Length: 147
Image (cartoon, rainbow, N blue to C red; front, top):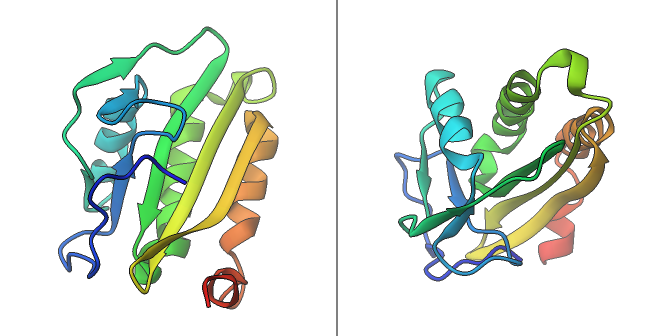
């Protein structure tokens, strides 16, 4: 579960996604990659904001890419995950996708609860491929799992 202090019960209509600190980090402490990721997502037209204002940033180790927890509205999930995957792929760089380890967690806010859609860690190429596959096709199991 993301480290969320004030998850909205009703999704703010002006937003596509929220970023939150990872569950293994203190509230308000985001991965160092978050600013670059938010900038790329906003440039691609997604309306993204912090769920709580950042109080600090955790340093990334070399060869490691840690994304913040990403919480999407149901209507933005599929398109948003693709934009996130492309932004991370660009940040890491095509030649380094196989040798960079990454971890990411994607949630959807459904009926007031953040439901895990995808969580993965490993080679960036594999994680990004699996993350994209987790939200493709007809509405996936996240609706049934949250019921």
